[in-house]
Length: 205
Ligand code: HEM
Image 1 (cartoon, rainbow, N blue to C red):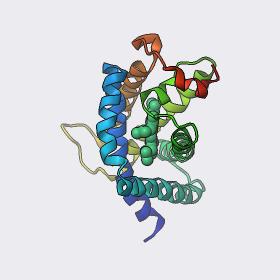
Image 2: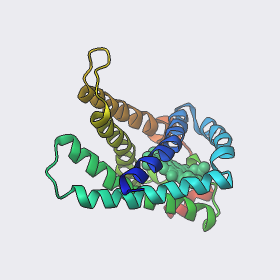
Image 3: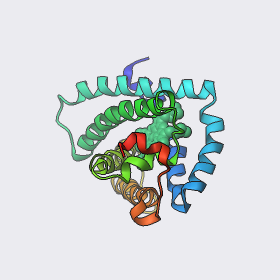
């Protein structure tokens, strides 16, 4: 199987997880408790040893094949959407390495429950939030950017008079709205989030 096929296959597996993961974060809008309640249910599925192994293999394959495709494509002239596809893909490769390593370090080294508060701790502490706000926002936007550009390439017909290019712009708009919704739920400025003491180890408080 060539890099492109593996990238498509691992992309489909990963999209399944990212879909439920981001839906879980959107649900954080109703409060940390609700977010954690849903995460505990979802973990029964994705923390199953088999599923988690498949997921981690998909993350690994996605990064390796993505970087292989990136090195080939960056040499050819690209359209605006082509540039978004490459830029978002490169960011996601870096983000996934850092994010998944951080989650496993949190679990196995710091012995923390990597729940809502694990994401919210850095986002709600100055000056760490100067890093974490763009770090998470660009990740969510890159997911939607990457999906939108693939959609624009593959989709051949209009829906309700909306051309494939404009459908892709709608996907980007939905990504932007969901990013704002997720941040609203995760930040104490708006939702009154109180981070428990055991997460101080992450923020150096
Ligand atoms: C605001 C944005 C995000 C926050 C706050 C966040 C936070 C978290 C947390 C707390 C976990 C641990 C889950 C658990 O212990 O059950 C996690 C796991 C994970 N996240 Fe995110 N995440 C965000 C966005 C993303 C995005 C955009 C992606 C993909 C591009 C992603 C991919 C993953 C992966 C692959 C795992 C590991 C799952 C596992 O094997 O246990 N996350 N994230």
